[in-house]
Amino acid sequence: MDVGVRLFTWLNGRLVGEDAYGNRYYVHKAGRQRDGREMRWVLYKGMAEASKVPPDWHAWLHHFTDALPDAQPITRFGWQKEHMPNLTGTRYAYRPPGHVLQGGKRERATGDYEPWTPA
Image (cartoon, rainbow, N blue to C red; front, side, top):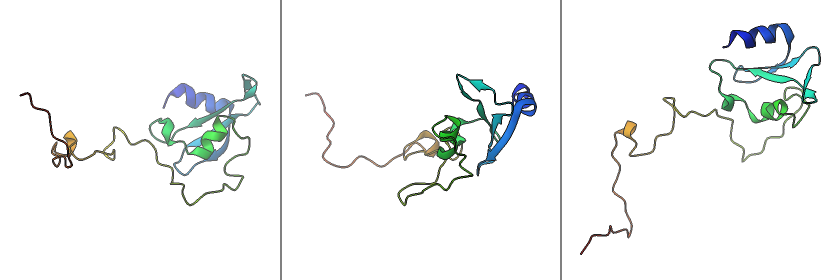
């Protein structure tokens, strides 16, 4: 992680919460504002990847809500899936049948498709 960000956070940040992934969320302890709104930021655990921020914390970071996700009950519906970071570029990425890293072979196409052949 960038040394400057860590130093800025140590000098100016007040920890307000942490998510299930270990990301830590901060506000400016002196109440400093940017564009008329409270400064908020996140220090990622591990590699900085924006998709690691769960939706409830994303809403707080972007000022959709002022209530901290830790401080309010969040309504979850049966159709909602658990948050998952973007896995593209990792060994856990989805690779469909026929993908080069899955052997490059796939089953023949079925159905009524017939390739055009010149007469």
